[in-house]
Length: 115
Length: 114
Image 1 (tube, rainbow over the protein chains, first blue to last red):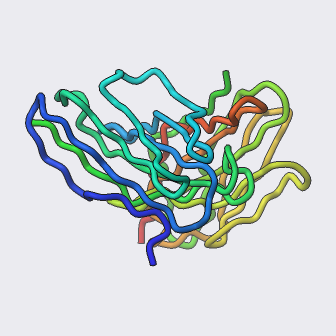
Image 2: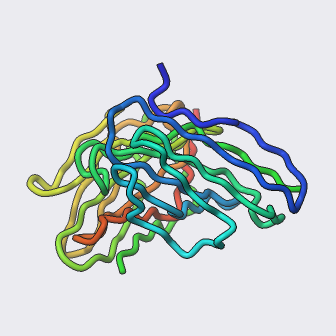
């Protein structure tokens, strides 16, 4: 049973479209995150939710909007996709904010390609 | 703001030899430090952490890391490298207080040569 699952695994779409990536964790963790990994493998945090409350909101375009309907789910919606949005997006979760206890558990990623 | 540096983009080591992947950090207050590994087309996996206590931390797959406060370093080590250790390794630091944001380094590709 996958601990942190993301869908879809691959997403190819045209510029200007709107798309969503879904994430679910079955670990009972309180905190969830979205990270973006660019082509150089650099990882940058985008958002973090703790018990459905947004606690970290880094400087990302407001075309990106996270939504957490409950603490097991954190979705990412992207409006008006641009070429520069092409990247791998990782969802992660941790037992508490900061992952001090057992670190983060990452999903396997969603490779977004904007054409 | 905290930061972490991984000075080597790639480390090559022969199978059976000891390996070291370097990491230095900058953070106000006591550091919380982590190592993660990423295999191709996979998410990151937690290897080990340093919160407090013994400067030598043991983790998964035979890896360990040495915390050195005076040198602000947290190098990842393994006594005998395996070909299967070839992957991308990330060092990370968690901020003290606030919402405990974790910042990742730029990653080091480890290549173990048979």
